[in-house]
Length: 396
Image (cartoon, rainbow, N blue to C red):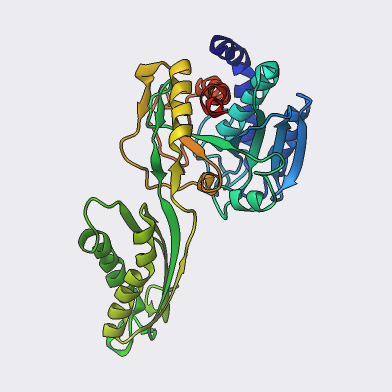
């Protein structure tokens, strides 16, 4: 069975490269993936699958329903980022300021490849299979609205798998982890209000720029002095907005950032910790403030049994020596966590390090992958479905 999966995936490789490059050249932001959605629908319709579109605006679902008791779902995200691509690749983005800088183009191509292989082998299935193409992982999150619109029902999903290409892992390697794989991601917004004035007479003002600088530095004390050193926590101010002239002290400065945590109990304490620091510093300078804390994606938890499926699938596709356990969770975030909080799930990293040139991180304008990973990913996703039959169905 698994030798056949690998052989069929190898045949699909040229077509998967073409699909990935088509999507890469025509990136679309979250909830605007109209052309990507149309392409996905056309590819799935050609397989004679039951296709439902327009889920959470641009989401697509295809189903192989053979009336079995169990259903396995496979998920890929479709959206791009507001990044200006700085690549010389022939398939670089055709849209100014929009780029697939996180590998979602590859995820879509891999899942379409898996759909083709699974359809070919559907007579060997003992589970129903849902193929979920999700909008807007990067922004407001498309997983939750898809769930609210019933993506995990009719038939009820019993397990779900997802993957992410990783440029820091060599191609041909799989990284998996039981338990917490990725962090919760929250958003903070702080407005510091002082009194503006002339840059040459700062004593006549309450300078929100200087106050903002103190706040930014003091927030780092939460991680370094208020947290157990073994607990992963990140507080990052990523945007500063205030002022419009070189000689005018502004009335206000806005700070926007992110908070990443693993432990939900620690996550609950973060709003008060941040607010107390901002309040103390602004009051000592005679300024005022407003503070908004928005909870975002939860931490991503991988189910033990589903991870075992991934591990066994990795053995079949890559071999034991290239199927590796990840030691520590990533402080990145993923709204696949919304799926895996509802049904048993496993999310894993697929090595995609470029064979030549410098390795650039996710969200970088020069991000790219080794395209040979496309058939590997399709094989691995397919193997997860058939390993699910061997492992999950033993319970009857």
